[in-house]
Length: 62
Image (cartoon, rainbow, N blue to C red; front, side):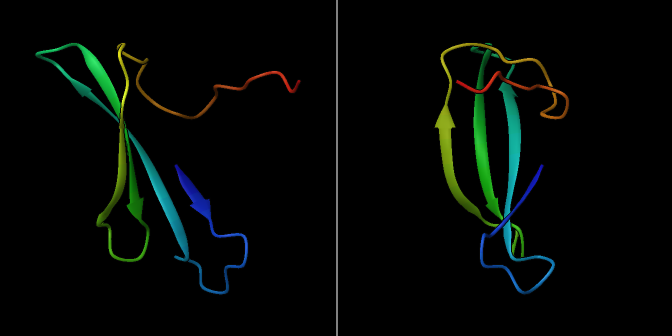
């Protein structure tokens, strides 16, 4: 999923979010990539297996 930078001027100015699954541990990770260079900026390990895909999952605003 592409997340544009709030002050973006170029179409590739932002981040790409990737949900990955480790099939050995059955845990997921959220990987953040620089959209221009496709290099990893950050990674968050999740203690559970998340459903594949990021589109179509919405949370209620509090």
